[in-house]
Image 1 (cartoon, rainbow, N blue to C red):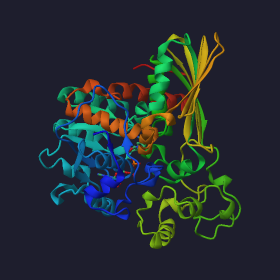
Image 2: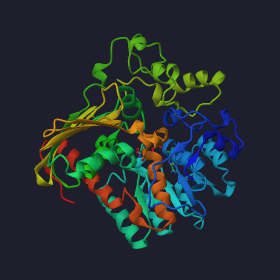
Image 3: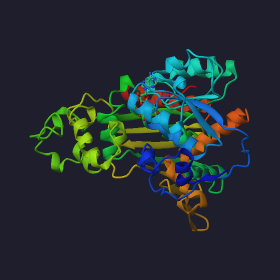
Image 4: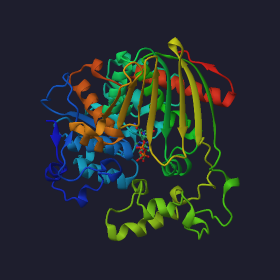
Length: 465
Ligand SMILES: NC(=O)c1ccc[n+]([C@@H]2O[C@H](COP(=O)([O-])OP(=O)(O)OC[C@H]3O[C@@H](n4cnc5c(N)ncnc54)[C@H](O)[C@@H]3O)[C@@H](O)[C@H]2O)c1
């Protein structure tokens, strides 16, 4: 079955639209109730006799992304267990997926205290809680869908790879950009040879100023040592996609970057510890928590507030008075760089400039590929090409594809593309179906480790895998 409307989901679970509010609008944006969700066709995929069963560890943002896939495609994925310490999230998740009480757990460790009861484990716990569950899941014979970054430690990445090989289990890393129609097209053009030899690449990742404030100043990833350096936490997708599009290994890296703006010395006069403390500059502050969460209602899932519009505003205000999300962006203990530039040399002398930028109005990637006989550039929707010989310009748009509505699945369609790829690999027991293997993912993680070594040590670093 290739399409399933949200109304069907509602019917299946006997829910009202309000009852489905865990379908975070951040990732379902643009998907109205009657629009079917369609995924690109893949000849290698087969209809399944029964869905792959999975246990989700961490029912936060990403756990819910895979949960939504299961609800949209119940013939493909059935979530039969959950581990989540926050009762509000655990309850909501268990009720959405009708999970039996005996299969609901507080932490990931509890899941492995009972005999194996599903095909796969989906690891969507925080960055520092990937290694333990990944090793244990493989050891117990589960297949694994592992959120990126694999681990903050190279040795732990290698240990997980070795365990997957030893146990012959399937393990996919959630490098979701590989599954977007846009990046698949960009790779196809880059590898086609139609514009001659690839000479160099320019790649820009715009984080967007409010997203930066949310995730890397106030949120889960604001202190590098507690999670991962931002080059891995945010940009391992970009390192991975560059390696994948170029199709050759990275040989050396030189990186620069720092935390320039979100610092105590930049706190404006009249600002306060929290945006709710009567801050004098709050009305004109672009990073105001009152504006982001209360007025715009962006990214409020992290606050665990009600979906009832009559009560939501008050609950948000209360959470901004106690949670990190209400704190002044200039008075945090954050240390992640807000601008980060990386120059890389790939095999064959291909040079790459990659800039991760917090201060952008857009949240997307823009890439320019320069070939001996032409130029290719895109913005995660449109790809343009220019042939130096024919002087011809062409345009291609992901949003013109019949399956474009899949983009509602988040990450420009990559989230559901990845979920289906993993399900098919497990159901057919064919690891070769995977696009984002752990081997490939480790290579781009090493690029990230070396980038930070270069940035902190102020030296060019060789990349050896
Ligand atoms: N693939 C992507 O594009 C992408 C995007 C965002 C985040 N991520 C990664 O996904 C992972 C989860 O991120 P998120 O945004 O969903 O974070 P989140 O904080 O929303 O979710 C993590 C959940 O894990 C739960 N948790 C904490 N300790 C636990 C434990 N011991 N056992 C079980 N659950 C526990 C938390 O309570 C939380 O609900 C992170 O590693 C993150 O870097 C990947």
